[in-house]
Length: 328
Image 1: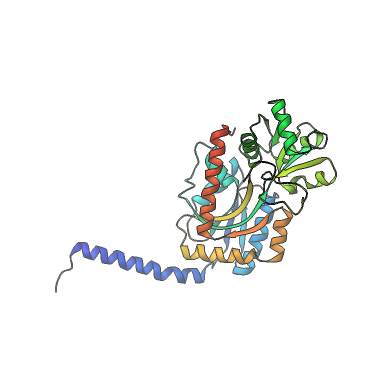
Image 2: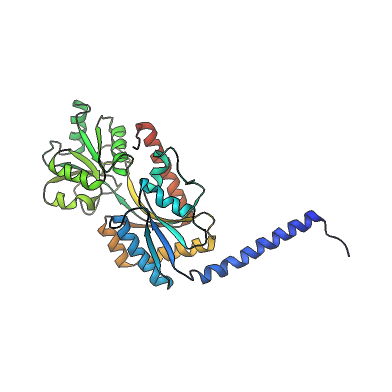
């Protein structure tokens, strides 16, 4: 019998393995999930991200016939929860409910306990939410133009609050400073709640915030909205111009909610999870739950979501570099 060349034999064995994987994956996806699935939320229970993650998890549980268990892993700007998923077995039973800090942490922290580019597989973008520029009702400017004029007349004298160094409200303020050419003083707080308390009391005059955080104070007249960071006016504030309309074209800052898996998760499972998440986001009560948190459904599959993350990372990296923003 003719003996097969060792190199050819090795290549044949590899080919058989590849064919085996290709053959097995579709079957694995069809039977998946066959046990409970973990959804890691990198924030403490009770916040906006946790609330909507639990609603999505409930709908996935109903769709899959398996429990989707939310696990809260807060701390270090979401990097603790992110690391938990990065190191998880890529078998389709662990996912990350990823908010905007997933991207921002990559550009504000000098080192991370994972490689954000290599250790995750994008599954789906679910929704985005804009920010609004709000000021205390007693603060003189009634428009973005008046605010910029005052800031230029008195450099460094106007402060803006944020939920902390390296947060989206902080970097939104830094972007505004760069685009408007003004010198504002950043005042970081330990969370959005304390910042809003001081904003309402007049201890600090302005802040970038999500509509859901400050809407009650806007309605009561304690705060006033000068602009929005979306490219189109918000239905909740139809008379408020966007910052793009206010003289700063393409000024867009969005928080987002998406789902990631550990790198190496079988692509068929990623595809099925993405399709099911898309179906969940079509449900009226899910869209309503997101809307209650000022978020609008915006579903992107694995490839487009990966491109979205890359664009967001590049945008925030540029802002951090140009502004010199740092975390504590």
